[in-house]
Image (spheres, rainbow, N blue to C red):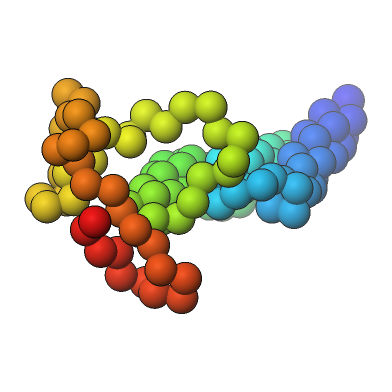
Length: 139
């Protein structure tokens, strides 16, 4: 019975990791790609590690696998969020089909801070991106 549960968890985890890799190829922009890989990849690896815990039933393996799961669930989403935030502030373009940009009028270029209140377009200068240029210019 336990081997069937281990098999199901391992295959489900492998399938989620496979979906994360498909998400890298199929999603149209950086932000959607990062979202797909951070969520599906983290859950997939967590399920595979949980399958290893059930399969081996050893204290050393269980403690290490649980530590990896906790570390992974704490760091992977935060890292994906920070990389996506840096990419957004660097001017990485959103997908043309993006419906809503929640940060559009909240980011202050002069102070590099996010405000809770939206500012009118006149007070928030647009970020112009020059192809091949890693630095943004106020415009």
